[in-house]
Image 1 (cartoon, helix red, strand yellow):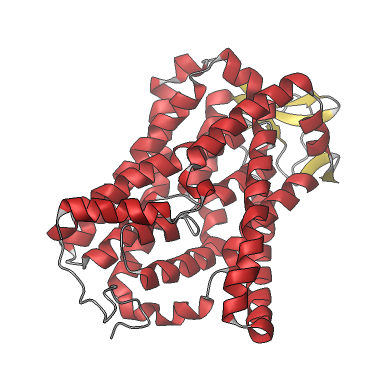
Image 2: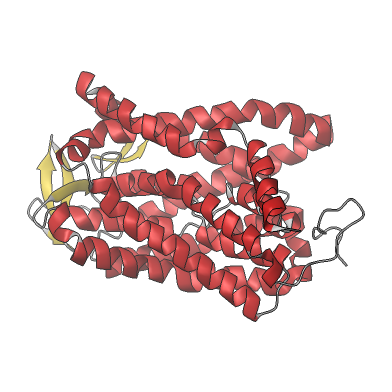
Length: 413
C-alpha cells in the first residue's frame, strides 16, 4: 500500500470520528474562553458549586457536582469494555507485557523527571518563583495553621484550612497524575485510525482499568511524596474507589444486564448512542468550571498553558518513540506495534482530572495541568497516528482476514 493511500485511509477513518472527538482541542479552547468569561461574570458560581461537598474534619473532600460530572465521564468508558477479553490476553503476550512495562515502569518516572526539569527549573522563573497555590488539606490530616507538610504550609482561607504550596509544584502534581493514568478511552480511536489490532487494544483497555485499581494510588502517592507535595493517601484510595472502581463495577454489571435483556445490537445502537452526549456535556461542564477558577492566572500569565504543555508534549512523543522502537526490536507485527506504542503515549485524562479535583481542589494548579493534557491530546496523537501509518512498511504485517481487516484476538490463532 502506498503512503498516499495509507494517508487517505487515515483521513477517511478520521471522518468517522464524532465531531467531539475530531475537534476536541477546539472544544477545550472554547471551554477556556467560556470559563474565563464565567469567572468574570459570576465569580462565586464555581466556588459555590465546589462548596457543595462531602466534608470531613471541616474540610471539603468530595465535590458533589464534580463527582457527578466525572462519574458520567467515566461510566460510558467502562460500560463499553468486555472484561472477558482479558482472559484471551495470553494470545498476545509480548505486546501486552510491553505496554504494561511502559505504562507502569517507565512512563510515570519520565513524566516526573520532565515535569520537574521544565516546571521546577527551566520555566520556574516564567511561572513565578514565589507564586503559590492553595490546595486541599490531605484527607485525614488535621494540622494547625502555620504547620508545614512537605513543601506546603497550612493556612486559613475563607475559614477553611488549606495547604499553600509553590505554584510550580501544583502544576507538577497535575503532570504526575497524568503520567500515571494510562488511556482506556480515546486509545480505541487512535488504534482504529492507525489500522492496528482492535482486539489487542480492547484487551489493554480492560487490563489498564484493572491495574489502575492497584498501581494508580501506589505510584501516585510515591511520586507526589518525592515531589514534596501533600500525600493524601486516604483521598487517593477514595479517588480510585469513586472514579475507577465505582464506574467499573457499574459498567460491568449494567453491561451484563443490558446484553442479557436487550441484546448486543440494542446495546450498541441505542444505549451507547444515548450515553455519548451525556459524556460530552459532563466533560465540557467540568472544564468550564475549572477555567472559571483559573481565569485570573491565565490572563495574568497567558503563557502558563504553554509552559505546562511543553513537558507534556515531549513526554508523549518520548513514550511513543520508546514503545514503537521496542516493538520493532521485539519484531512485533505493525498491527500490534502501533496500538502498543499509542496506549503508552496517550493519557487517561478523565481519571487525572477527577483525581486532581478530589486531591487538590477544583481551583488548583494541579487540576489546570490535567486539563492542558486534554488540550494537546488530539493534535499530538493524530500526528503520531500519521507517523505510524507512514512507517507501517518497516514492520512485518499480520495476515489479513477474509474481509481485508487484520485479525483481532478473537480471530487470530
